[in-house]
Amino acid sequence: MSESSQMELMLPKGMRDLDPPDKILQLRVLDAIRGIFESYGYLPLETPLVERMDVLKAKFAAGEGTDVSQEIFQVTDQGERELGLRFDMTVPLARYVAMNPTIKLPFKRYVMGKVFRDGPIKLGRYREFWQADADIIGAPGALADAEGVFMARDLFTALDLDVTILMSSRELLRELMDALDIEESLRGKTIIALDKLKKIGKDGVIAEMKKTGVSFEQAERLMSMTDLEGSNEDRLQSLEKILSDSKGCARIREILEILKEVPNLVFDPTLARGLEYYTGFFFEVVLNSSQISSSLVGTGRYDKMIGQFLGGKQEFAAVGISFGVSVICDALREKGEGKTRSLTRVFVVPVSRNERAYALQIAQQLRGEGINTDLDMLERGIGKNFAYADTLGIPFVVVVGDDEMTGGMCSVKNMMTGDQKKLPIEELITLVK
Figure 1 (cartoon, rainbow, N blue to C red):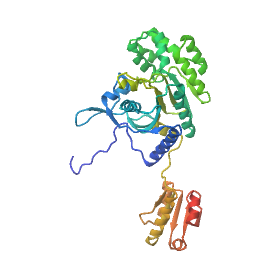
Figure 2: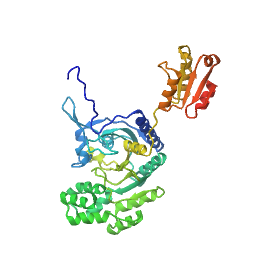
Figure 3: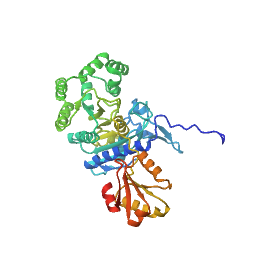
Figure 4: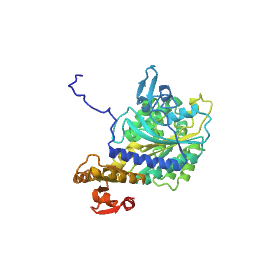
């Protein structure tokens, strides 16, 4: 490239910059999620962005032939070792626990950070996105399964998002495939096909199942067993008639009883989730009346994964929840939120250099009281500073001239109402708070 030529600046496909309003919204969501995680007793943990490829692509992790296994961003270090960017937070957690088997159980951890998938792009889906996960290791019961639903309810109530919680069970799907004599080697791809029901419809799912080796009769019967109408109780009773002494149905019934006060909770046996590692209960959260079709939450029980990293010598009960932070932010923007342009509450303007030290003293006093405060650094006129604060949505502008400095006062303008008054610093702090 010659010195005079200009580089064409572009972002990698499926990735984006977050402007301040977008990042402010994201931090608001992350703070809300972190507060909920910690209120339920979860501890923070951090794992690397990059994992060994054999960890990510293990049959009991991403699985063979899944969309996720094909979407891993692959990298190589200078030692030519095959590595990949993490596609979720669950596999790194399982690797961490397997490497630290003396952890006190139950181990409740949360993590918030970026994950990467080199997959298709649509509204609410990107190739680099934030997830916020909480997992319980060492608790096999229904209370652990249900806790994620409670946390999801708490978050979406706090954010005022209208959602439906869809739940099902991989254990139940296995029992249905047992009843249909579907070969073990075909079950992973059968579940992947079922997971696409909302995208490609019933006929499309049956066609995909046939491609995997499942007979037309088996595929059609599996669809009729899972694509049920009626209430949660109606659907559960229908399955209990098909599956006598079903452990999957019994577990679903127990979880539904624990969650009976949770609104918009739907037992949907067609829900499959394509990842190989799920072993029992799982759920998703989707928006009602929205252009965004991506799930806001993905979660499930994965009791086998950690033990398989240890060669199958141990079994660790494990269940987790994963909030799709980027999608939640998109949902909030869709309803008109996310327009905050600044976190500053007060903008302090010295009339001249003579008042600069006094203005700085006021700014520091406000900051000491926990009030976000900025200070004019360009020595602009008062009118331009008012316009600047108005553009950023800063609610208060404090002007200090010689009179204010001499009297230990400040002139404050409420940018929302237009009211102006001269106050001592202590009254300014009370006003802003």
